[in-house]
Length: 346
Image (tube, rainbow, N blue to C red; front, side):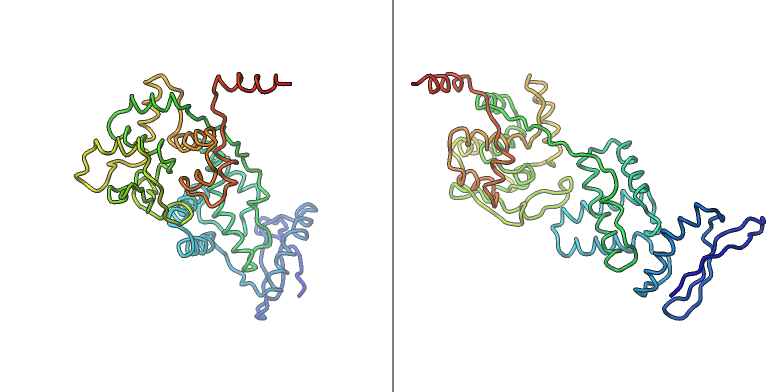
């Protein structure tokens, strides 16, 4: 069906562009484009607006305002039904952040430049590149839903200039530093670090541990703490796992009071802050709690342990992750001597 472009004067006598077309239902539409007549505006309408109107007529798309919330609601509904609770919570937080800055606008009027303005707003709030890219995931999915329903024909998020996420070098502790840290730590932080250094478990999994999860010299990882400790979910990957209780950890745990089932009193974030302050106070380089998992893995790899044994403790489904993510060199002054002797052999 033909879309006609014409102009007519407004109340100020200035010529404004209009379109005239007939919808699939047979209803005739004449509407202003709120653009003054000019060569540039006429070219813009012919290049962008008219093809979009023709596409809607072709696919029988209803001519109305489509709010962004219609499509983020679809994304959140699918996430709640098909994804883990922590993924749904992250998506919901990202969507709420989008509306706090952009508002619930017509999805057809959000272009690449608007998405880039949103990204710049997140940068000004001090969000990291990784967080910004994470926040864009459900927004991208909302546009994809609108494309699926033939409401729009282009997704602006992939086309926007997004911040580059740089992989930070993971710093690990050597064996001497690990034992110094354990010796100097106190209270529940000390208990947390014993679990971390002698299991390689994720911080969220450690916080969620109960005494009932430890029996017959085995530790059972049944859950993980999420969303600032307010909820618990299955461990990453959706699978429970178990591994042997190592003797140094077992010996330490035998000294603790087990009157209540829950081992830890605070959220993961509390231990993360406490650990950071502890390291600085005791003269160590500042590091994250997750570095304990990397330290555990690197120490086992350095001792030439079977990769499948390391995989057994970490709970990864693939050995590739161990080499790709957790392989870090831990300096040992004997390495240079050993390599020198090996290379000097004729």
